Length: 283
Image (cartoon, rainbow, N blue to C red; front, side):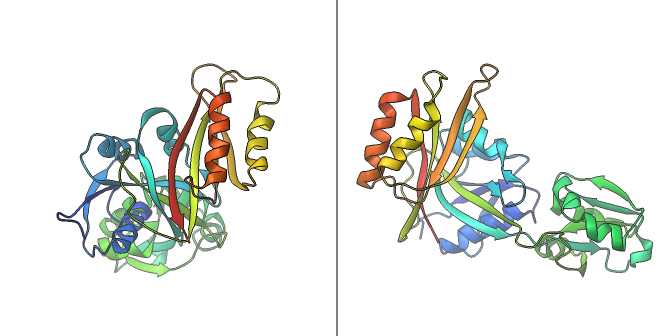
């Protein structure tokens, strides 16, 4: 246990999936009622961690349907020195939420985050055809709007509905089952590990000296020689020039193992920068 309760920065408002992930991380640390710092964006979460406004931050890393969260990747690559301390995978289950006294025929508008609306198209076409849609800053915000207005239905998680006092009319309304988001627990650079485990994942950001033919093959070869199986590789523009890219890479190995250290040291001789974003236990 910590001498003083650590503060967790998260993407607000209360009731978001990020809030749910923050509480899950806190529970793993033995904290039942975590101190939470609501932020308006993932940029703000990273800033709060880097400036020491909180001990931990929680950011979405990747969604099984939408892919990597670019705002998070860009912060890791270009803006922040924060390190990844842990990972939590949250099942995304959307619910139709309404005012406690409202009926389905009362609904004139469906509100939710853009992804929430997009991921429930089939349900909305079948059950609420022709209703106007309004995009909100988060799914949690749609639960708050539904509570305020009986003519508005929200798409949010059950956690947000309970938090704001809205009624869950129907559960699991998403078009694709198996929708999951992985969230990262981040801390300031040099923060000691907070979790232990048998299996580890390592996240890297690799920056090239110069863009030339065969560079990606060279990177992949170093990992292949070391017997490291990559679980993710993604390019992102460096924001310096058109066609100038860097790479994010993940693999399920501890960064402190000898094969990984060998591969990283070889890459450091050939690349402009090898940035270890974190090495942390996974299920």
